[in-house]
Image (cartoon, rainbow, N blue to C red):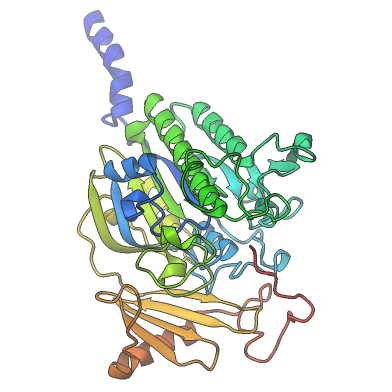
Length: 467
């Protein structure tokens, strides 16, 4: 009998860990999001001049998605969709302005709140955009156990900031007032690494890494709006300085993605961690043309053409996700909340617009996406634009009175051929979606300005697009 008990005692930890004697432990989730990184800024998406070996390796070990969409064409809108699982016409923030009325409120449910209720420890670094210090919308009021970086997105334009938000307090950086002593990206990475090192064996974690690279910086930090400690390893290239700095930014981004993934592997978490890498919207129009930042896609950030909203999207989860795969499954930021909820064994809010894409993440043959994807932009500006993807059709309307342009993305990824006159039935269907998809909100002027009942006047709040 003693021998039997000894054998059971020796095997019990393994049985629990392997899931034979208990429910399988849900995966850790690390979601890494660059800021304004173009669709073709990575080697695995066709970039020829900027080297991204670590992110490319991530794609080699997992799945590279070719039809993934951001939540919106600008920062705040895209992050609101990601966090709430609600599309651009329902999310709290639907544009970059105004800030305070569009911040998250107590009734909003974020993916961090869903995961926290499922037993996850939730941490975030980088650019939040959805609630300043002292507001209900700040990250630590929205499910995150800890947050380090920038709560205000305008503050995130400073790579040599005088302080960074640290939970409910601040980390003061007095050395940056006169000298460049602390580069924020380095501090964000260090805090992310510390969070992973603090992981407990029996507690899954969610780490949201909302990096600010390679977003343009405040002009008072750098004459080119590209603050970076060094142009290495591109200093000797026969390029202009802005091109060198942009490439160096992506180099730092790639380097630190590699550091994070290496730590996950070295900590014995390789097969227990889903890693996702993406960008918050399309590349910026000011990026040097030599890099062809958005590749074959038309348009840039702030546009509702594919160049403004289609983004690189890479997943890795060894042992669960197949390696060396490319997927043309249509997925979007609003799908992340229900996907993570399914992986965690949690129930997502009923008000979301996304759907779980666990099936697609595991490399299974994607079915045609049911329903539609919706974006809009310019609620507080002089022109309100809308876009819809329905099956392989993409409809775009520029301005309330604009005609709907129609593109067949299955053979026209660059949106060069408007086929609206050939498919009036499809145009009518997309027009119906554009009319019904956005829902007016008392705390955000969706539909108010362009329908003649302004609650937020541009003359009082001039349009100040981010750099």
